[in-house]
Figure 1 (tube, one colour):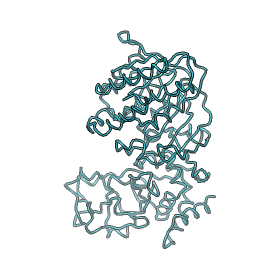
Figure 2 (figure 1 turned 135 degrees about the vertical axis):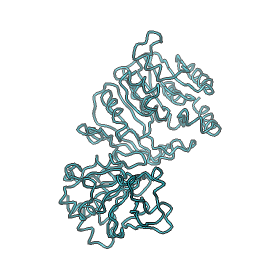
Figure 3 (figure 1 turned 90 degrees about the vertical axis):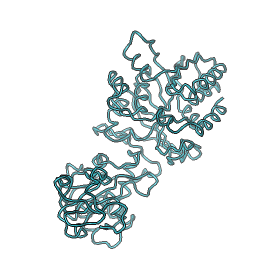
Figure 4 (figure 1 turned 45 degrees about the vertical axis):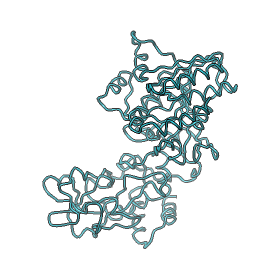
Length: 494
């Protein structure tokens, strides 16, 4: 059945309107991923299976689970499936495929063409006017991916049951976890973006307080899992156990959804989640680089160092009236990521596709910084790049005597209370951020294409003296290679 359903998935992926996919956050699960997800469920002593598939689509995940049952890999006295799907076009396909699979596994299948969030919230609140949902023993899910507005009915409903989140996928996962019975298992494919950042902190708190993290699977290629839908979002697959005792975590990695080169390593939970970190970032160590880590002496926060990092305050489209192609009287430099190369800084750039300057006046003054040495990191990068963090230094000698600078919004700026840093500290900070150790650490928790100021605050750093010494060393070098920077960091901090 699953193979036939996969043919339908490919047909729908090719013919479904892009606007509809976006409106529903709808991306169907390929059969190799569905089978892999179903394989993660661990045998238990539970004899009655209550399976929940919220946002079931055409049923690939439920079918993969039932396929395991039919093959005798999961054994239950009885199986009941609840599959939620609101797309009325595909509900008949879902019903046909699940009913057919149910006949082979003696399963009772219920397709619910209703809003899962509303149904789950009503059930958790004990709404007398709606039928309660059971406590499920298993959940398998590929939830919709779409933002939830702060003032939306969904956001208000979720708050009634103590769930604060910003996206449908995290809402579905949190509600499904809340509906699980003790020691119930949840397998989900989710965008990795929830692993870090302030917006998903309440969601991380919610799941880590209620479940043990048993397994995480990472795809090295972010363009493979949903390639028929041209999805570039990096996805991971999780196995959670409701109310389980947290032990070590299995981290598996494969290049793509063929799983042909899968590797599995076991990590202490403390290496995955530092419970003393109030952000509760989820780190996903790479088996390929498990011997590259930040040195223990790099244990200082930016607050310890009296350094701040902020997003560049100039949003160019909001200041469009004041942008200038080249500097002129009454203007100051405006710096974009394009002004910085690997180890160089060039301003202005003739023929630059962005502005080189911004008018200094009463409207723009509050967005400007005094000229000085600053370390900057571009905000956009992807996992396929050589380094996720690319740091550079602003040298005021290259700014033609300007007294103020504008930093565009696609840069993160390291500063000291909105003023420049000591020269050696700026260069040392850039060198440290460009090391392989920092890149490896950053990749463990950052799964999206942005390098946010919050992410940079969450890193740890060597002490100020070490950073300045590293900067003095780097300033003496004509050319800096990756090997040189890494070796110098090891020499200074061990």
